[in-house]
Length: 313
Ligand code: BDR
Ligand code: CA
Image (cartoon, rainbow, N blue to C red):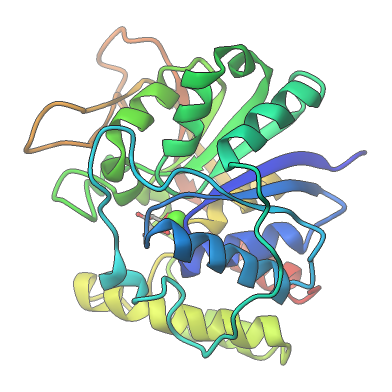
């Protein structure tokens, strides 16, 4: 079977970086048409640079990297250096990338790609705020129906919030964009904190990365070590969630995940609960179902998949 065509929309971020590596490690299954950076964990000049660092690390200079939007649709950018460090990829020492950034704006790249490729053949994989995707849908509504599906990391229901008591970071940064995407009608699969918090790193899981004895394994272990400290302090847990790789793992091995088809609506007005993903998990309303909201994961199998595939790089 031909590999599935995907576009990764991302704000690297250590966990974004691991997700990108996982995708690039699986060319038989995933054809990464391009990587589009968005402002999120850190500002756009850093996220686009980090995306290029990751492609180089994977030895995939053939994958084009684009810069998309540098600010949310209607708000000031909120970043997460307190989690990811000043560069967004703090941890190991890294050299500047030599892989050039594409001239085309990331939003135009997504629009052109969706118009060029056969309708229903391209999957979008957002790993950060949904600004680029919502801008695409607003600027070129004709492409909405051409998207095969969206599999994204964002939101939370039982785990409530990680950037405010009510909201998860990716949705909170650009709630207007999230609202557009969740109402778009595109088949949507959502990896919320509810699932990512069920697959925490452990010493053994990080050791498996380090023991690859490859540059990729060493970097992933160092990133994970850095990224862990924040969540371990915050939640008092043994490890930390690796959020974004869940999206790519779902494309590779969907049976590792389970969830419910439900309605999820984004809060865009309340100051107190801005960016909340109000998930009708118990199906109490008659709001139309708009996504598969994932709630569970086979965590050991997820980490085995991750280390088996990353070892290929
Ligand atoms: C999400 O926010 C970012 O900090 C991570 O990269 C992930 O995409 C988790 O809330
Ligand atoms: Ca991210």
